[in-house]
Image 1 (cartoon, helix red, strand yellow):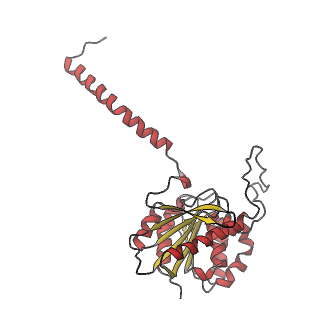
Image 2: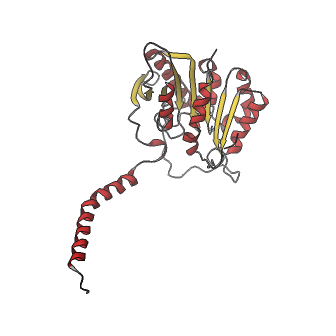
Length: 297
């Protein structure tokens, strides 16, 4: 980490027959287990964790019911305020993408309400301004795929994504007794960029924010301008794997240099050998430890 034809005895024949019988009995079960392993989805779109509540609310702007996910620690009670974390998924993910694994274990231990908005759809970007198309490693922008299926996204998708996220924050505040001084924002990849964007734009809401391998390419040139207004009030933790090929470590280090120059209250956790997916769970303990240290004044 930076801061790893032969005559056999009857007994033998009987033994072989018994082994074959046991094998025949066990074979269907073993085959079923193998098939289940092969069919099990991997990555960000696994089935929801049964500990997580699956909900919807009515999004008036488009007259749709949008999904969101909620985990409530057993330590949350009606008579006291509880800390809240809004968790933003990456591109192609869903409201459940960060709502699993050690994130839930840590939220349970810390007494958190952990919430995953959809951000309108899997490609919403949470309001992050669009930038020019990213160039390939050769320096030439990649061509569009000939058989690409149009996604029919609305022209104002990013604005809708931002509003959906902030709507969920208000929805949770109305339902639960949320501690306004311990409300946090975190996100991975696209959600990491969304964390930097919504974290600075709505800084009054957050005690601290956490960007996991942030795909903040379109905002990188304006990083200083974005961060300067909150440099004295917004604690930030960034986690990154140095084997990440989706969000190269060099891009994230650029953001860290800006935070360093501004003398921000930040923590950077760079992990050797971790990639774009593995950094989520590997960096989660550091994020929860960071959040525990900060309460909004």
